[in-house]
Length: 241
View 1 (cartoon, rainbow, N blue to C red):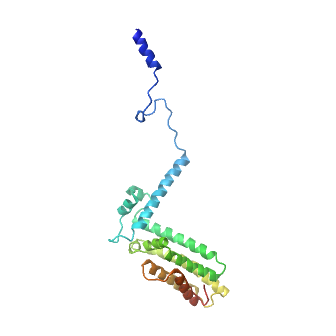
View 2: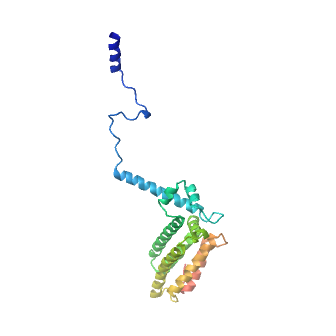
View 3: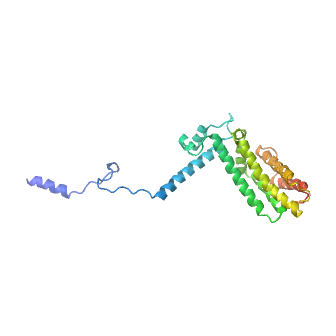
């Protein structure tokens, strides 16, 4: 009896052993609180944004670089370290991915161009800002690489690419035409033919850009600017630079 009572007392007095990670919560422990709805939503949104950025980075690294001339979705996902399900959460196909890349880049370039020319205080200043904008793309390795990828033969084979390219060109020409029309009204560009000359000027900067992209010999920034402004000035009947 005495030893039995001592065992009961010891069991009562002995503290409970500390639970280990594998024991789980005690039966009477309260449930862990759920994350606030807004916090969970922000976390999911951040995850989706990270996935999309990873896919776009991988695509810019791979598209136009393949010896076969075609980059597969699998190759992009391997580079991005993502699954097929994660890809199709964002893009319906590789064509949809390339078009999304092209639209995003075109919108960014258009916004930068619009901001550059709208900050000028005269048509002459605006046309110089326009030239500087395109030269900046041609001479900035990071921005030029984006153009190189999106003008590659692989990208151009994308269904719907030509339509997207045409719409982008229309936007650029509209900005340039407006500058030329303003210069015509004010007398800054006395010999200008806005629509016709807008296409000619766009072709000039596009030619310079393509020369740089293909690694062909081209003048340094300062010389390229001087030469381009000289050509543009002769077309518009004014002195630039």
